[in-house]
Length: 196
Image (cartoon, rainbow, N blue to C red; front, side, top):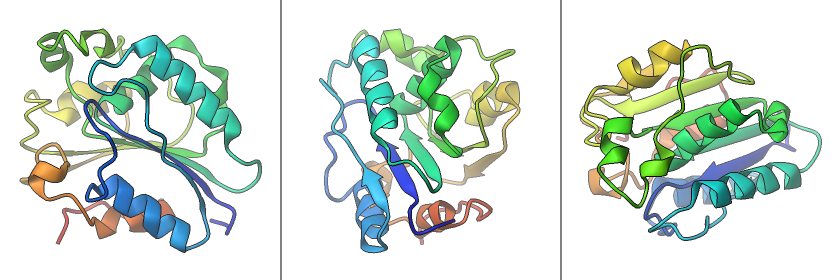
């Protein structure tokens, strides 16, 4: 990793980037270390439009500085947003060096919420991710009751770290400061673990 690393941090449904959330905490810690961080407020987070979020994803990827490692961290609805972008062949994805998908919600849950039903994941069999991708999720995530390893990691053929009692890895479960996600950002070989 170089001092010019760039990070794109993407929030989920109904998230207005509260300062207490781990993503906000992470963005601040990375900036303190001199990294370029983009942590955008995606449009209409309560009633997101998949096409609008895809356009924003592509725009923010294009705006990342050239040179250095480029890393994406996508939580919840943005994790499945990333999979939609892969399925559609969004060209900007090829410029990313690694990705962390955090607590992607399953189709069964998304279908139960009209505001976000369009985000139901695309077919995953045969989907080729553009670069190294990891998944981290709670073993008791109410937004993926079938289990993230079964629904996402195994079909995609990616490594998964399933954290005990971590739920949806959100503020509800106490995921403000989360040191291991910072360690992963700085060293992609670091394992993700529950917050202390």
